[in-house]
Image (cartoon, rainbow, N blue to C red):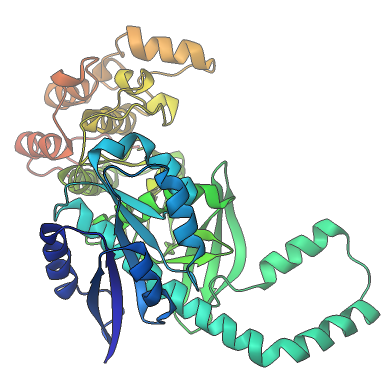
Amino acid sequence: MISDTVLLINLNSEEESFLRNLIANMEIEELEETALKSVAVSSVEEAKHFLDDETTRLVIMRLEEKGRRIDHEIRRFKKSFQRPVPLMILVPEIHMRKVKDYLRAGADEFWILPLDSSAFVVRLRVLLELGQSIRETHGSMSQRQSAGSLWSHVGSRLRRLFAAPDTPAQTAISETWSQLIAGKWQRIRRLGFGSFGEVCLVKDQTGGGLAVAKIPHDKKMNRKFLREAVILKTLNGHPNAVHLKEVVKEEDKLVLIQEYIEGSTLHDLLAEGLSSASKEKAFLQLLDVVAYAHKHNIMHRDIKPENIIVTPNGELKLLDFGTSKDLSRGSISSTVIGSRPYMAPEQIMGKSRIASDVWALGVVLYSLATEFLPFYDENEKQLMDFILETEPDPPRELEPSLSQELEAIILKCLKKDWAERYADAHELRQDLLQKFPDFGTGVALPQQ
């Protein structure tokens, strides 16, 4: 059995013991043939000796509490790496305001001390899998470059002699799409393009089938993509969450490889027309996955029908956790993000929280019940004013066949004061099923 190393630098005895036990008992998906061991050293200088070791998969370094220009030290240390290895820094609370500087200096991930075994273990798992992927890719690329360098050179000369001239743009596109991602994933077609990156359909050249690759535009987005990977890994156990296959590195950019899901968005299905039972089944699955996320202190922040896919067999998948936030270390997020018609008042004001997802679920349920959004205006400023200041039309005025109990549930989700809503998706689901035990069979929502 292969034994891979996690290098621990400058940890105190308690932290070292915690990590040694965690690493010794950790099982990594798809790496059953690999054992993990930890090696602890007391200084950066002593650590450099181990960076030549091909078995080193991850470096975890505790920052000095009284250190100066720590970012410079991290930069020099990262440059001393003989090959790509993820670096995680453990940051004393006194330095937490400088975390962005440390990440810019070369750290791949961080954790504000003290250590704990909840959210930390997921981050550690993702970094270990990333380290394994980087090592495999780096090794296979080195072999290919060594074995194929001569013929690559001859081939390029022949292509220049006999091929028709390309424009610079054509050359850039062809080179990007011809290369495999991490030496394994072949691009098939682009599925989407946004401000953070692009989404491509890819095929596993080793015979693993289709997947979806989320590729950042720039390596500056790596931290954001790593955060999404940690969240997806946390939710991997739920059937209605998109499964993260692996995290790989390509041209210094972190790429997320996710499962490929065939189906239609809930938005498109509603436009075509859905039975009341189909709508209820979809909403129950949505509640279940959001409740699971809330249980793990994760809020989605962009729940809407366009981010929901329903497969031909009726299984729902909630997509786009790129906007999600892990609230393990706090109860609110100050980032204004989301889709305006589904944003809660506090979300618009930059104080989103778990209850903001409950608002979005209420908007979705309102739409399923009435075929209308509770708040809408083409003018974005006017729309936000409506959300902040006006009450929605009661659902029964738009769909008289709705019961008073369902209307009350919807309007509770849409309370302006987040404290008056359901605390989370689990509480909403409990109340819905208590009042409608047969919800999912078409008992509460109207036929479309």
